[in-house]
Image 1 (cartoon, rainbow, N blue to C red):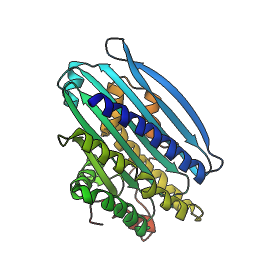
Image 2: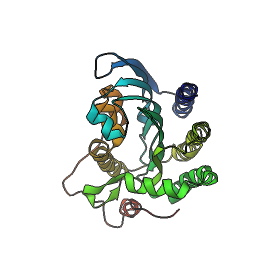
Image 3: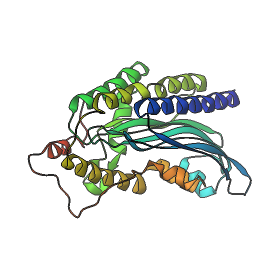
Image 4: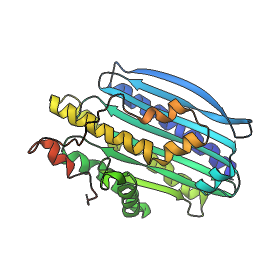
Length: 296
């Protein structure tokens, strides 16, 4: 049974990659797509699977990445212990995406949905989170409402929202979140693999409707130099999280993944200014108060 489920989830994430690609092309008619199919070796030098990376750049979408991978094979004992595997071997498939729009009135968005087998253990992980740069609170509410509607019937919304609030955090920045949260789950296995498969297929299918309506709503809004300046500095905070804390980044690098495909999550441009803070009384100062957990 497990082989059938692995095959079905791998096919599902590739289909989702295609659907998200189509949504990006609809948003940005001038978008350019670079697709790479790559292979890796496991720690013993044997074939270990690979993936399909799609990198995007355009007018509305400054840069984005929508990647799928299916990797397997031997790992180090240390890595197996870190991920909670029962043996020094693993199998994993998933889709991971990051979208950095050019217009700072449009939020950045990230999501990933994956299935991992580590020895005798099987689990699912993933989620979706929003990183806005302008205090359009109705957009934040919309994003959270979609995930609340999606996850509440399964009984996990509050738990996964809390995990997201606690995970996407720059703890070295006084526990400031990188965005306004969403959902996050890891090492999930209910004991019923078929039921879990259907649940996570359903949940991952909701990404497009959680985010792209926001993009379409804001895509033609005018923005100021101050808006862009704030966006670039907040992207700097995004980089800090992804390089210092993100488990997916660390998993990919430690499992001999493809470095460029892993670091595609980083924005094309960002700023760092010593002791940066937005202008007093600006909408960007207002935005800062939303980078902490709250109920939506």
